[in-house]
Length: 120
Length: 111
Image (cartoon, rainbow over all chains, first blue to last red; front, side):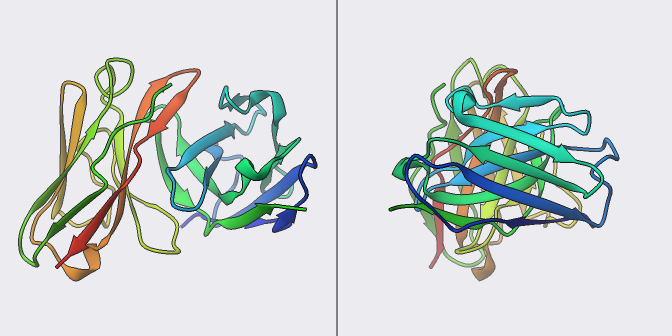
């Protein structure tokens, strides 16, 4: 059973960079079975796909975030990471790392989520 | 890319059936058989309940079923149980650039 766990600061100042890491256990991130994605959810609002990455390093980003976004993968650590620059209060949300079947466009395994608040 | 439209809330009594609709456009729901549904209990991560419009992952109760007609997908929960009370989100593939769009979520109350 694949398990995912997010880690990173819970508070980020406006204009700074939000950085989160997802550690995958119970399977190899390099297996090729999944892509690895980030999804966020502002309080009381809908889910928003942020982007995803494959073991090869190929990425696909939400066009609305593309200019501020970077997703990377470290297969040696079984981890993938999110960096979102120039954050504002609108980026305050629970951030989930998720496995994604890109061919079938669904999200199977989810981390528990981590709340990131953007505030000075 | 526009988001999908769901009713804000639905309710039903134990044992009854309810249906949640999810309306998109010809660019997402109407063009692809790649609609998925997620159940989210308060403070928890979403859980995949349905994928590819009608398929259930292993371990999901067969009380959950789904369908699609045109630009609208639907999730039906039969034999409502107290544990079904949660938020439900639909999701559709929307092309290689946008990838997916989500619905706004529907709060299910079991009376």
